[in-house]
Length: 140
Length: 140
Image 1 (cartoon, rainbow over the protein chains, first blue to last red):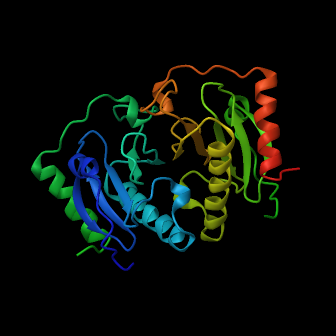
Image 2: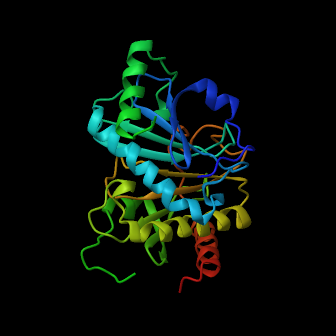
């Protein structure tokens, strides 16, 4: 996708998560919460709030990027189920949660949003996940 | 979409929600919880679990059906924000939650999954919403 200079990552998303890199449409970030392997995909299109505001031309790309991240989480973290959500009640900028879940995780079978406060990664653990994502998704 | 005889709605989704009708790809249902205007879209494709398992040929249709339901909820219920999610930790059959939210609802700004037990609709209130959805989405 052609970069638009009008897109700016919301500061709350920036502070809650760690940079992985750029996919074709989305900024890919890792939520800084070691309890769940939890990615954010943020389409680099300015002023989007709702999922259905994403222009048709970008929709298959978004779906494909969700697929790539989902496959990574299923194949390279101890996850057996993916949760995908676009909520945005707290941070209006359109962002997709893609979360690896498993039956023995802290919140199963409930959503991650019932699990209480997050726990930051150690630097090493975060780097391992970020490097893995970059390699698998061919992000330079 | 051509109906496949192999698709069967999961009994838990059937008992938690009320039938609205069939869109091109998805079965549309209203969650029987008067606290939130909350629809379910269930693609009529057998054996789907994860969002990214939906065949590419159906992805734009799914997006379009999410859009139609979102626009209905924003235009015809007191909702100012849409939450979309495919979780499936409790019911494995792929289903999308499309939920109308507003800053004075019971759970705002948290997700609806932190709001405790649901409250069934009265028959009249459910019928009003179902009839409205059918008319607006041209479901016969």
